[in-house]
Length: 501
Image 1 (cartoon, rainbow, N blue to C red):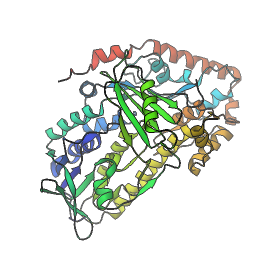
Image 2: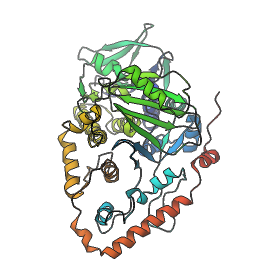
Image 3: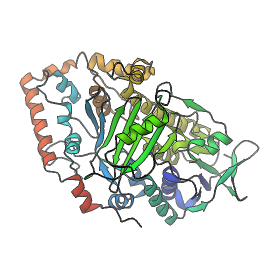
Image 4: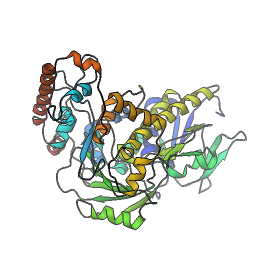
């Protein structure tokens, strides 16, 4: 870092990433820093990440967001999970629901007891997920625990309009003293040692800073064009490289879950907001042409499109360093993992939280940078493996794209997880792995991976007691879900979206 103490932070680019960074840094470190964000009102927002995962609650707490106010300003709805249709095989569907599945017993994870029961006698795995039962019945309430039981309540995230979210955070950040400059960035000016000294604007002005955050999207104006950081390409495992995106009108009350439907050479998303529905088709351009993919999207909408579809090109992977010299990249500038598990906004927020924890100060920052990059790489790789899992363990035989995904050589880290589950039903996750046991369980089971055995300690519980335990859990979950209000009614009462201005 060129100066002894960081006193000025310059954020290149706005959008979701830029304004999340500005808001959080202003809230946590604000008084000791000058924060400037440069964005051009002439440049649009990609806005792919309209769905989130429950970890967003950590960001909301950090910046002290009022949940109902945030949802009103962003036309947001609640999200209890993601439904995957046609991924295992055509006509089959399952859900990756948030929250626990069942309840562990005697130090052995719940699913070992479920798997030990004779076929059909334990019901569906998702009968034990409060989130799943509520989602499929269109119900929601903020409930942290099922009353008069030891069972957890609902775990939720959100769907929202990304452009409205950026605008909402922009107002919050500027209210905390963040300076916004409306201009196009022409390039970066560097010190002789390579650190960035200033951003040069197209009108000739220069904006100097000590620490720069690159939120300039796929082009990576600072992290790549100036610093030549390099990119790690993961398209050999995630071959989809394009997406069409289009909004449609709502056809009824918004469902409290995202839907991902597999197509011939990719998949289609459906994200219900209060004022519209977000749709998109992620696909592999080596397998299907752009116009054919566009027609596939338009032919499978629930309602007429409200605009022309917008094409987004990308290469899955990440920068080789997310913190290089005095530049930290976030959002699309840091890399891209397709939005199958709604991790785009999560990757922004953990980058912000990690930067705040390792914030550069006086002296050498080499070890801080090293730790930041180590943790960021691990985070990306954990998520990469989880997304590849959906593609790899499919049963869509005779379809070129899906055959290629099933037969490809996957990362050793993923191969080990799959084979361990097949061998023993074991699922072991690192503490900092975003997706924990119940997430892996639902996707492995939902995609048709079946273990050959279960934990031997299951036999310590008699068959009759196991059956009674499972039956009681199913009953409690179903009964509690039936008492929840309709998702649309809850929104109307607590956080109905503001009328367009």
